[in-house]
Every structure is written in C-alpha cells, then in structure tokens.
Length: 329
Image 1: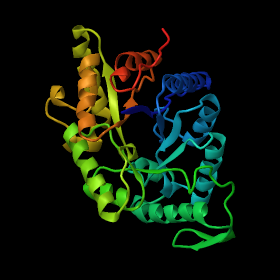
Image 2: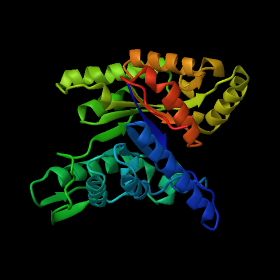
Image 3: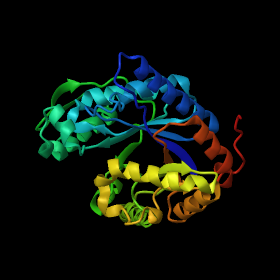
Image 4: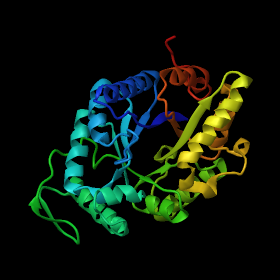
C-alpha cells in the first residue's frame, strides 16, 4: 500500500500577508510529506469561491517541484472546458521537465455552476468541450512534429507544442469518476482513476472491480496503482477525542456532503469513508480498503498539519511498508 495527499492550500482574503502564510504552511506540509515517503500529491483547484482555495494549481506545483525530490505532483483537477488545451499541454509539459518527470494530470469537465458562470461558459457545453480539449492535448503530446486540428471549439493550423513532456508518451492522465459509466469510460480511454473521499468502502470496492473488469475486457493491463482513493484523516489518541472527531466530520459533510448525499449513511458512526479513530482503528480501516483493491490512498487533511502527517507516518505507515519510516520528533 502506498500513501499520498489530496487537497491544497487555503488562504484568507487580506492584503496578502495571510495569503502568503497559507501557501507557505502548505508548502512545508508537502515538503515534509516528501521527506516521509509519501508518493503522491493531488492538488485541488477551484475559482471564485471566496474561501481562499488554490486557483492556480500548476503555478504552486511548479514551486513544489523545486522544493521536493520524489513525491509525484498531480492536479485534481484541471477543468478543461475553461482552458485553451494547447496552453494546458505546454504548461504540463514544462512542469514535467522541471519536476524530472513527476507530473500526473488529473482532468475533469467541472461540476460547479458558479465557476462556469464566472468564466461565462455554458455548463451544458462541458462534455463536448472536455472531449475536444482532450483530443487536442493527446495530439499535442503524441504527434510527430507539427499538427493541425479543426473542431467545433478549437482550430489550429500546422502548430508544434513545445516542450515535449519528459514522460513518454505523456504524463499519466487521471479522471475523477464515480458513476459506473464514468468508471468504465476512464478504463476504456486510458485514464487512471481518482475516487472521491465520500464513497463508502463497499462502493470503493465496487468501482475498482468495474474498472478492473473493463480494463480486462479491452485488453488494458491493470495495476492497482492506477487507482487512487481519497480518504479524510481524523486520527485520535484518546477516547475523549472521539466525540469531537465526529462533530468535525459532521461539519465537513455539511459543506461537501451535498455532492454525494446518496453515499452517506444516516448515522455518522456508520460512515466508513473517513480514516477516523485510533491508529489501530485507522490501520484496520486501511486493511479493509486494501482487501477491496484500494492500495493507493490519498489523505485529506484540511488543516495540512505536519504533526498529523508525522503521526500517521510513525503510527500507521509501518503496518503497510516493508520497513518503518524514520520520523523526526
């Protein structure tokens, strides 16, 4: 089993000082994760929220490329309907070179109406814009020399996209998917699979089984590392902390739960999605996920706490790694 991170910096609207501190804290969090042996970072990107979420993920990842050595740097996700696909291809390829081939490109078609409204793009066009953008990006990275493209939204004549990415034929492509149809599409179209933090353990197992089955049907080799599962981390060390952990979980669900209300149990105690509990309970939950085929876990910690990261590396990771990971006090 391998572990990574899912999330991003969060800042406060101010004259810039608090914003800077928010980014600096997140950067130190990722640098420490790199040192502790975490394999992936998938950075969330959103726009117009007023909540200080990262809006320029590739800029932050470029900085992290210089501050880290081993952790892979991914987007979660670039919403392609809002972007010129050739510029995306150039930016990702540049980041791939700067990072020494550590980029993972997570893409999506978007789901927040306010973001589409802010960019003045009809949400009804999201799917067709996404499909054409991916066609252009794949051409940009796999064409020998110059290429042309004439579609409904984009037209290019005799262009060459530079630089070429270091990873060949291109950085791994990841698709966030939840419905059975979208999971099958990810398998058919060559994407790796990002699974969300709200899905229950049995739902994760079902989706991985569908992905693996579809890969087999089309003759695509399956590797468990092709699936990454986001999980909220709420580790406690005393029983007196459990009630507060449940209250925190309720607050989180009040914010993001409407995105997947059908996935959530009636009682918070029956929610199998978070890694909530003592280290031994977290290990037990991870072993459930491992048995279901989820061996690539992305931790979600909205506080980006270095202390939580170190505790997880010290008290949980050794149960799944060949040798214990050294952790500084």
